[in-house]
Image 1 (tube, rainbow, N blue to C red):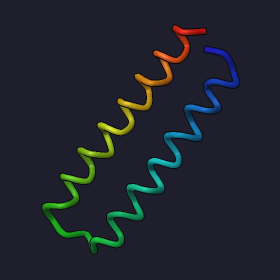
Image 2 (tube, rainbow, N blue to C red; image 1 turned 120 degrees about the horizontal axis):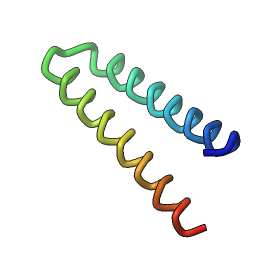
Image 3 (spheres, rainbow, N blue to C red; image 1 turned 60 degrees about the horizontal axis):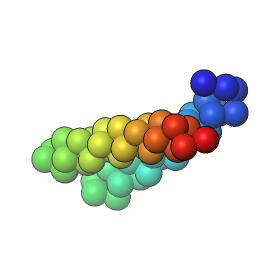
Length: 59
């Protein structure tokens, strides 16, 4: 993994973290939605990592 792709991955994960925290704040930290939102957030990260790996294979 070169430096540029690491930076891109960090930026994407950072954006996902900010979005997830924003959603939790907007929802007012309702107990059940925290787990649901966190699960969706983890799936987003895994999907992003998978897309980046697939993109690298094509190059």
